[in-house]
Each structure stands twice: as structure tokens, then as C-alpha cells.
Length: 292
Length: 127
Image (cartoon, rainbow over all chains, first blue to last red; front, side, top):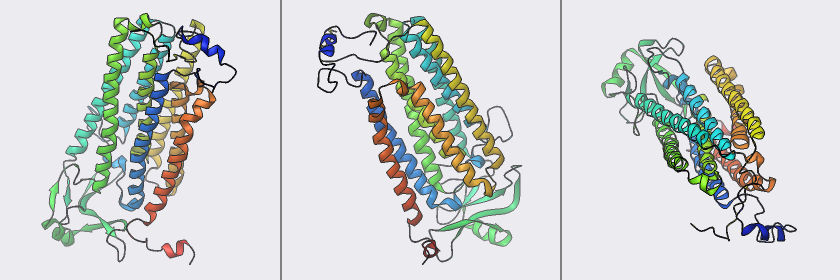
């Protein structure tokens, strides 16, 4: 109970100490702002869970033809070859590191070290900005796709892809993969079948050559993969962006010396909660979208 | 702005000493090392086994467990939920666990049947 307790509130607190729920006290020992931030984060966590569960639903339904993220996200800046998921792993590390710098800012605030709070907040804002930039870079590559592209068949949904060796990333000329329907079913699939020669030529004649992904078609396979990718990483990216903005505003308040005047840095703690939450969500997005 | 007397500015730990800070910083660095190590292990496992059909289930559950471990450290240490009162911890976590547990259960079950019966479902129930 050290620190800044509002002077008028302190006596009534001790009056009611026998019954914490009797009113006039704070039974959770948490300030109003911090508690409301937590409640907001729970509601936000529900939103993200809803999105990820919807993703899980569709992925489970189309399990047999769902693209492997390792085949899609293989780019790395300033490197021509393919390294699976290396860049996403780096992004994850950057976000975790910026979470640590944020918690260090909060810790410095507890010791009322203004300079230190400023320093760590600048690093946090930088980390967040780098992460948003990296996500933009990922989107760019996903939207533009590969050089060889794929063929969107007549139905406007199914994609005929080049067969590519997953280990060497070498393209097998003239051989393609198309989703194979389960016997007697149009909506159930049992993996991919190889198509080549004349059969492939016939399918190609009515198909459109496409590159990359957008909301209606996806070079790497089922369009739902792209839809969920854009929606979930986009929604998360928007959270990161707003987190950077909020942190920047709080940073300006720190520089102004506002919290030196109020006597505590709890505002940094509150924006810190939001920032850690963004990191927390990314941990789940990383696992369910990229790793699995 | 005048202080309002109907709002309580109670927090368990708005301030702490230099020594306490030193200990906390050490703890944060340990957590950073742990989270990074787990991420590297996950990506490494993915690179080695992601196309091995026999490892699919093991990988899936390992990843989910490791993710929950990471999430636990982030909420408990970085977000300081571990330092809050027990009652507050449960106020935050209990509704989440109950509702999301139900949502995940119902979605995974329904996804098995969505868009018509899966061929072979009759064998699934043994009749």
C-alpha cells in the first residue's frame, strides 16, 4: 500500500478493513484505470479467440487441402533463397523484446526514474514500429506471390498449383497439384492429386494465371487461408499500430514530466498492459497460423 | 485537475526500491531468454518434422503446450497478473477459460460435421 494513495480515500479504507466487500474500499487492491484496462483486454481476448477459433473451424474442415505455412512464408530480407518461417520467428523475437523493454519502462517508473522510463519507452516504440513494418513486408510478399504463380480453374475457387519439392523448393516442370474431391462429395477433399500432360493442358485452357493472394483467390491454395491471414494478422497489426500510437502519447506525457507531478507512473503500466497483450496475441497467431 | 474522492488509486505496487528493482530486472531477462529459447525450439522442430506425417500429432500438441507456457509467462510476469490478488486473477481468468473452452470444444466438434456428413462417419460411432 505504499505510494500514491489519494489522501481523502485513505481513512475510509482503514474504517472498512474488516469487510473488504462492504463498500468504501478497493477489495482487489487495483486502481480503477488498471482494472478497466484488464476488463477491456478480456473482451479483446474474446475477439481474438473468436477469430482464431473460426480459423480452427475452417482449417479442421478443410484439413486435407490446407496449405502449409512453411511453403508460403519462405522469404527473408536481403536473401535470395528460401528459409521457412525464419523471418516470422525474427518478428516474434522483436515483439517479445519490445515487451521486455516495456516492462523495464514500467519497472523504472516504479522507482520514479524519468530518464530511464523515457529510454525504455523509445526502444519499445521502435520495436513496435519495426514489427508493423515487417508485417507490411510479409503482406507485400504474400500479395505478390511467386514468379511462377498458379492457375485458377474455371470455378473461380480451385487452384492448380505447380508441384514443388518442399525441401529444395525446385519446381517440377509440367506437373501440377489439384484438390481431390472425396468420392461422391463436392465439399469434402482427400488431399491433392497430381495432374500432368494432356489433362493438365485441358484444365489450363480454361484457367486464369494468377500470382499471389487476395481476398478472392490465393495462389497457394484455398482462398480461406488468405482471408484468415489478412483478417487475423491485419487485426493484430492494427492493434500493434494503435499500441505504438498510445505508447508514443504516453511517452510525450513522460517527457512533459506529467507523472513526476502526479507522483506515480501508473499510466505507463496501463499502456504497458495493452502492449503485452499485443505480444500475447501474437504468440497464439504465430503458433496457429505459422507453426501448425 | 482536482483529485476526486470517490475514486481510489489503490495499486499493490506503484513504487518499489532499488534492490527490488534489480531483482525484477533479472527476472525479466530470464523470462526473455526463456521465451526466445522456446520460440527457437518451436521453429527448429517445425523445420525438421513439419512434413513428417508420423510426427504431426506430437508436434501439434507440443506447440500448443509450449504456446500456453509462453502465454503464462507473459501474463503472469510481464503483465504482473501473478502479483495481483488471487480474487482479481480469477476475475480475469475464469470467465475467459470457461467461455473459450466451450467455444473451442463446440467449434472443433462441429467442424467435423460441417457441410454434410463426413464419409465413414458411421464407422466413427461404431454402427
